[in-house]
Length: 362
Ligand code: COI
Image (cartoon, rainbow, N blue to C red; front, side, top):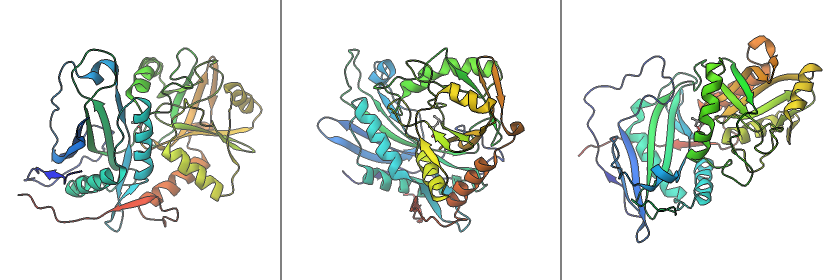
């Protein structure tokens, strides 16, 4: 791969971030991009000011959805150091998603170096408040112009940066979730375990209808019987029972979350009985009725740890912990964010430092 080309913009004023960042509304000054074609492979790596993309109206991803993405985060620690959380796992997952929709894989080591350069250039945009971070959105799309259905021959890879706060409008307060059996998000052997646009498109109508009814999001059941609990779409789900903490096992239609995996590791270290297994919605309702259900929480890069305060399935309305964050959820939130912000030693080697260098604009 050639060296990265730099076309940097001079900032005349200091970056000022609003007190409340929300999610995905603010973008930094620069992005990284590179192109793919069959002759050159991935080539043309460049960091340049964020600007509109040039897209042909017949670009294949627009019509047939051949696109994948990731979401990971960088944090500014109290010491001033900048770190990313498990970026290697996110780029491995990006390549897994790509394989499933015939997108050529990227060289993870090269992209990690490019990402460090990009973050260093836009480091002023990294927020410092606990819970805030720099969200990193890598994505790839099939870019050549052709109207037949087949894998594209040309692709664009982009790294986009966005300072963010809490993902949900509730902030880090418990969310209200509706269990849907009216729609399905994914089926086994389909695309459910890939981060590809199709899964999110499939979730929109159910999400919109849930919001109209006063819910934050929906909890998806399996695509065949609508019996087994799967995930929320923006986060994986954990059910905190009296004698075990259950998260649905990865079965091909659930996204293998990096935060999910980290939480499982933390719970095991805490000697808690965390189990990956199938769990039906009826088992959850029974546990609630029998007083065996302590709470439900979600995990995700954007959501971090999010308590579910209310869960509705058909006519059954469940409320956990009086709608307040659960004790275990808070403990996990504190543990993860303490690692993110360097308040606790990173004993797992989950953080990757971003070296801060002087940026020269020529
Ligand atoms: C994430 O947690 O990074 C996600 O991808 C969820 C959502 C913003 C799509």
